[in-house]
Length: 143
Image (cartoon, rainbow, N blue to C red; front, side):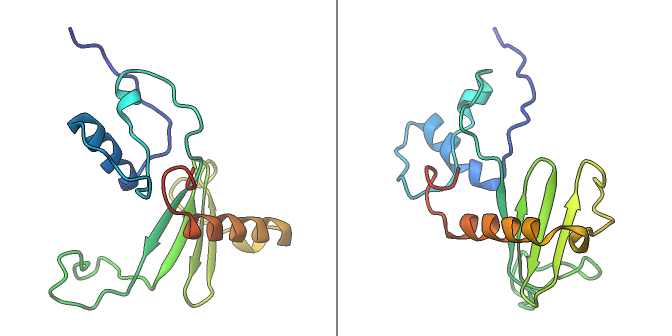
């Protein structure tokens, strides 16, 4: 008999793909692989110590015509950036020094960059958190 699975508010992304696929296949996954298995979520269990932030990276602009991930015309092709994504906010650092911050509860469509309104302390805290995620390696360290 199948049970309905409740949606989860757990933050997830492509880093969560390898662990559950490996677990379901019975394969061993090295500790160096980022991410955690979502299999427990599929069984309706609550997860402890789930990550509260995700690293988003883009290396561009992508000008290689043979790259299958190259954006199409008019799709945009931003410069290199790294971002810190949480349930409630996104903080972005671009290669050229530009910064963006969006409160996703108040501005879910990311229309109003409020970085300049943040205190120096908040800016420094966000920068440190992003730097920590950029340095982490493996599921245990990247929580």
